[in-house]
Each structure stands twice: as C-alpha cells, then as structure tokens.
Length: 359
Length: 183
Image (cartoon, rainbow over all chains, first blue to last red):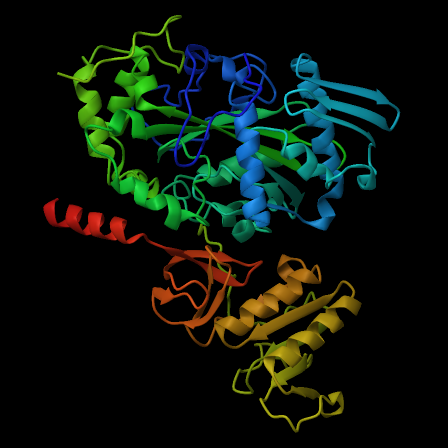
C-alpha cells in the first residue's frame, strides 16, 4: 500500500479526502449477503482474507498521515478522548509491544524497532518520530505508553480488563467513533456498554459474544466488520460533537448523494494481551463515498439491496432515516437484480470508470 | 436477559455471606433491609441538620448532609477489608453517588446492594460540555452549562453517576417532523 507522507487531506470542512483505485479495491465492504441483520460474524484475524485491508495485523493505508494528524487535533481539542485507568498499566505496555513489533515486522519501510533487552529503539518514518526508551519504564517516553503509541495508528483502541467473568472498558483512545463516548462508557461491563444497541440483546448476540471473548487466546486474534453511514468524510462522529456534525444528516439531496453519503466500515479486531490478560479492541474505520462504491458492480448492487430491505429499527439506530430513501433511489437504476456471489470480495481487479449521473 | 447499563436496584435483604454490614440512607424514612434482627447493620443516616454530631455510640451515625456521609464513606471503605456488605437506600441521585464511592474503593459487584430509588429524578450529564444536571424529571433538560436542550438517553454511566444527555440539532428536529407528516 502506498502511503502519502504529507497530510493534504481534511476530515472536517472544507472536506478533502480522495481514495485511489487501490484503496477502493482493498475496502472491507461489510455485506457478504444481500440482506443484513446483526450477528457475531467473528472469524480468526489471520493475515489473509477477501480484501487487502485484512491482510495485516494493523492496517496502514494511504490516509495514515492525515488520520494521525486529525487524531492529534481532536485530542488537543478534547483530551478526554484518551483515558486509561491506572490498573491498566501492564496492558498499556502489552499494547506498545504488539503495535511496535507487528508494524515494524509488516511495514519495515515505514517502521523499525530495535530491542536489546529492555532498551528499545522505535522509528516511525511516516511521522518522523524516533525514540529510545526502556520498555516498562513510562518515564522514558514523552507520553504515557498507550497514548504514545495509539497516536501513531489509524483507528480507535480500547483496553478491556477481564474480571468477574466480564470485560470492563477501562481505557482507550477514541477519536473516530460511530456515536459512542469513551468518557461516558469508561468502566462499563460488556453488556452495559452495548445497552443502547437495539435487538441484538434479545437475539443473544451479546451473551454469545462475551462468552467467546472471555476465552480469547493470546496470538489468536479475531475480527469482524461493523458498519453504519456517515455524511461527509468525517472521522469524528462522536456524541460529544453531535451538535456540530448532526445537521449534515439533513443535507443529502439527489444531486449530492454520491459524494456526501459514505459507507462507514469498522474493521474490528480483538487481541488477548499476554502480561495483563486484558483484551485490546481495535476499531479501524474506513469511509467510502457512494461515488467510489459505484465503481465495483457487485458492491453497488448489494448495497442497494441491503439498504432497501434494512430493518427499520436498525435504520433508526444507525441514524439513516433522513437520507436512506435518497440513497436507495440513487442506487436502484444500477441494480439489475442479477444474483451476486456470496462474500465481500469485489470480484473485479479493475474499477469501472466513475459513473455519470443516472439518466 | 435484561441488558441495561442502569444500576442494579433490588429490594434490600441482609446478605448472610457478609461479615460486616453497613447501611447508608439519605433520610431516616428508608426502612432497614429485610432480615435485620439477630444481625444488625451499622446505620448511617443523613438528617440535614448542622447540630448533629457523627457519634457512633447511639448505634446509628447521624450525618449533616449527603456530602458529609459520602466523604465519611470514602474514608471508611478505604480501610475496609473483604467481607463488608454495603447497603444503600434513598433518592436516585444519592444512590448514584454511593455507587461511585463504592466503585472507587474497589468493592465488587455483589458487595454493593442498592434499594429501588425513592424518586425518579435523574442526574443527566451533558455529553457536549460535561455539566451535571441534577434532579431532572422530564425526558429533556436545558443544560446548565452550554444551554443545549438535552434529550435523555436510556444509557447510564455508573462511573459518572448520570444518564447521557445529547442535544438534537434544530434542523434535524424539523426534518424529522416533516418526514413524519409526509410519511
């Protein structure tokens, strides 16, 4: 994956985010079937999968520098986006080790790590950081260990302590979230922080999910995809700033729908951490405008079918009600109803040309 | 199973697995836990009276205010060991604050027992500006801090001791009203 080394993009007005053909084709399109309902849909996070975004432990793409810059700006505006409870110190270092070792191993052109006993030397060439430190000694880093490293990664991260047969949200850095708040959910149990999600509880999804995660093993991470939709390429769709971005939901028209409406996909990966026995939850966010999704025939047809038939409760919960019909109407002429292959893979190696507006 | 982030309220019953029992309440009207008799909890009661002395010799400690009780509770729990059962009764706001003090002291789930609250007034934290709005009876409240009209979500943070309040941009309210009329 080619990575831009400067941040020319903007995730707030005036928006300026573009996706290369490579980025579009590696997008983790979230619908393996023509209809959608909640499920655990968990699979091993191995270094392969139907799209390239799944091929690394932590995915780095062309938006890396711009996303890290946006994250730094959000943290400066609102320091409560990063909170770690004191009893999570061991988990912080677990995270540092997992992140630095996998990034340097899988992206040696961008990151390198030299370890001599507890003396570590970290280089991040994309952001221009170089740091010698003593592993386990927080005074040798310029920031607390979790914060130091999470700032150098795309996506959100939460740390979960395991006790009383439950998982507790006892830390995290959350700047690109789909309408939930770390400062509010901090300290909550698994079922507590999922309480606002409709339907899934009665389906037993959370009970099964929790039982599964309590048994998650070190070096056997798992992944799943989750999705919603976002108007404009805005990473920070937090409740904290809902008064700022919420009005965008009323701004979609047939003329701007292809550029305004984005499919927001979270590649969620979970890792058991070895020293702390905590769980790291990584939420890697991808924003893809309809205009780009249109260039993959399978994806545009399937997105049309999923949105057309979406359960109204889910549509409301995800905040789609004001513009879902506009999206469906836009997509309908491009769906001939032909059967589509199961799975999320694009089934093309080249994109179609950007489409002209529907006749 | 019920999925909720709210505090687990239940009628108070003395838990025989406890070694020491402490009952805190924000008025003397709150009844003792069921099962009191042979075993009696230590009782702390808020009486809202600046002349009372927090004297334990009478078997019941009288505190001048909720704040005084909570401060004393924090000090007590810091010295406690395994085996204590903490019981709380009173208003919703008081119980929220008791839970915060208990959690800060590291008490586990079964060690804190809270009676169903006497009132329905809720504490609501503004997610936009962090202001705590106390005694909220309705489903909306104008935030004391930033002036936003907050809609109270059925999502409770034990750590903050409050429900989440989120504003709704005016243009969305209008658009949803229009959609409801046409659809």
